[in-house]
Image 1 (cartoon, rainbow, N blue to C red):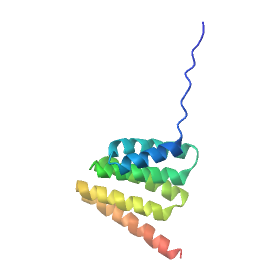
Image 2: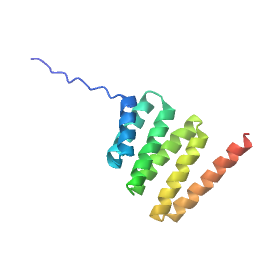
Image 3: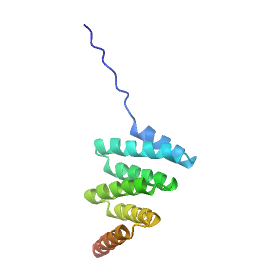
Image 4: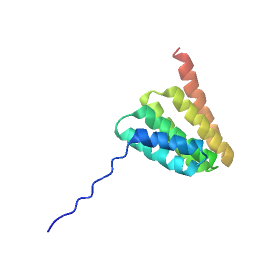
Length: 130
């Protein structure tokens, strides 16, 4: 009995990154969001954390453009989480600000207040370090 092995097609995050950017620029936000999110996972797996945070951020922008604020917030929060873990604090603040805007669009006042507090704390920490 022979066992058939299925060869996995290797996903190239650099090509996917470029493809997602092109889709985003041409207004194909859903397709771009999906590829940005997948690319973020691939970058994370190979420990390219900065590009991972950037791709989650771009996935968030794509979802935001679709007015899918719930998904946008998820992507921005993931970007912020990795950013703060890896010391990309300024980038993390930007992601939190965009997540806050998503909560504003959804009218979630408690979440807005929570994020504004965190943004303020991080900004104060950054200012104190200079």
